[in-house]
Image (cartoon, rainbow, N blue to C red; front, top):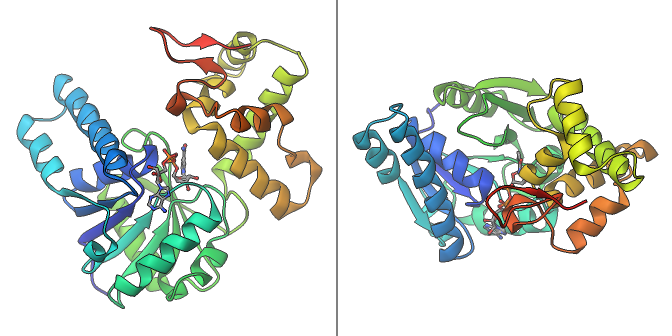
Amino acid sequence: MTAIKKIGIIGAGQMGNGIAHVCAAAGFDIILLDISDEALKRGLGTITKNLDRAVAKGKLTEADKAATLGRIKPTTAYADFADSDLVIEAATEDEKIKRAIFAQLCPVLKPEAHIASNTSSLSITRLGAATDRPAKFMGMHFMNPVPVMQLVELIRGIATSEETFSLVREMTLKLGKKPVSAEDFPAFIVNRILLPMINEAVYTLYEGVGSVTCIDTAMKLGANHPMGPLELADFIGLDTCLAVMQVLHDGLADTKYRPCPLLVKYVEAGWLGRKTGRGFYDYTGEVPVPTR
Ligand SMILES: NC(=O)c1ccc[n+]([C@@H]2O[C@H](COP(=O)([O-])OP(=O)(O)OC[C@H]3O[C@@H](n4cnc5c(N)ncnc54)[C@H](O)[C@@H]3O)[C@@H](O)[C@H]2O)c1
């Protein structure tokens, strides 16, 4: 059992850049891949901004910041994953995209390398079967924002070996994160519980029970949630929220998981939350402004 040292990360979006940040900070060498130089530049920009914030707060030295950034190599070429021990896939939540990624990734990987997916909801067993190494494939579900959130859900597919699970668990502990084990059911533990609540908040808005501000304030002050559900939906990304609800609806065949039509409309409009500047709030000004 060889310990993991070199890590490849696919997707430099909000999750991928966060995973690259925490892995590099823990001393792992990182190859970070995305489809374009602009996506990589944006991802590295976010990592730099987050490291700068830690330096300003006195939590990190300039030397540590430089060392962390120095361990992240951006690329658009899969060949750079040739000596990775583990590749973590954190691309868009779309099974077709993930399958296409594995088709490009597997031929360049060394046979003993492991693959983990950061999917929020898709079947680990099915994704693993789309690779050439289901025994070395598992789910590694980080929480957003990755540098802040402690939890990582670890999910075995039906074929995942104990060796892969133990190595990834050990590596998760090296990141200073707390792993919990979840079975391979749609959306695992956190999103099985969290996303139906967010979807219900969108229904509450859709049916006119409350405004954006009233719903978020009610849940913050009435249920002691640190963020309102609509604010949280914008933070997660409305496309990701919809994708998770669709997986729950299809996978568990229960109408209680029906995605709210208003959530569908927002995604169709390209109003995906913070990442596009508009969701249930408008983020183009100094402070977020509710849109309903
Ligand atoms: N947003 C969350 O709160 C959250 C939390 C946990 C897990 N996840 C999961 O993490 C994954 C990524 O989500 P995100 O929020 O970072 O999304 P995002 O939209 O911020 O980033 C996705 C990135 O994937 C890249 N990408 C798309 N197609 C690609 C391809 N073929 N090859 C390489 N890169 C490609 C995009 O360019 C983009 O940079 C999803 O599976 C999502 O379900 C998200």
